[in-house]
Amino acid sequence: MRPMQESDMDEVMAVELLAYEFPWTLGNMRDCLKSKYCCCVYVQSSGIIGYAIMSVAVGEANILNLCIHPDMQGQGLGRRLMEHMLMLAHQQQVDTVFLELRASNRAASTLYDAMGFNEMGVRQNYYPAKKGREDAILMAKIL
Ligand SMILES: CC(C)(COP(=O)(O)OP(=O)(O)OC[C@H]1O[C@@H](n2cnc3c(N)ncnc32)[C@H](O)[C@@H]1OP(=O)(O)O)[C@@H](O)C(=O)NCCC(=O)NCCS
Image (cartoon, rainbow, N blue to C red; front, side, top):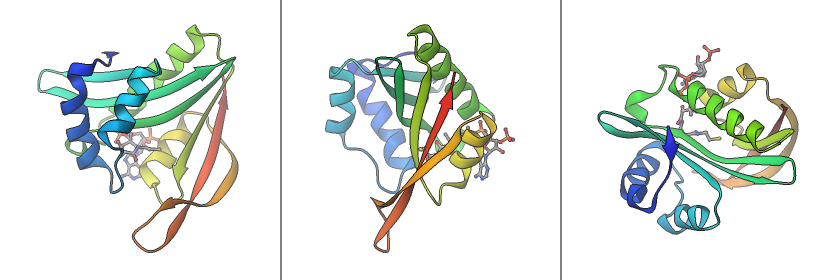
């Protein structure tokens, strides 16, 4: 795992478009990099197989995106990437890490539960969905 660079953008966006039904735009991704968010890529010999983006401010972090290429999911890589982000947060004196996920996202929900995140609340109708809108679950983990 290493910091994301501007030259990674095409590969990162290719994974983003495959992994999400409602993906971020290239502009969203670039803004995070320009804003000096904590942006990491997970690289294997085949290239970029995952990435994560986290904002950090005054003792709090927000994981804004965490993604593994669909062909590589279910092998423990998402867990490893999350462990890496938590380690980076800890190094920056973060005490609480927040994230939001779609209510229907079983894989992410299982991962976050297993990693000790607790449900803090629900943002109703937060995400666009195929049919109308979908709730976001707000989760937090104390480091
Ligand atoms: C969520 C995501 C990052 C998980 O990465 P992954 O590499 O597939 O996950 P891992 O193999 O590390 O598995 C982590 C846990 O999730 C569970 N899991 C993985 N895929 C699952 C699925 N499809 N359904 C249910 N649970 C699943 C595993 O069983 C494992 O739990 P365990 O440790 O208790 O056995 C990955 O599915 C992904 O990139 N999804 C698309 C993008 C996304 O939704 N990101 C999250 C945004 S909030």
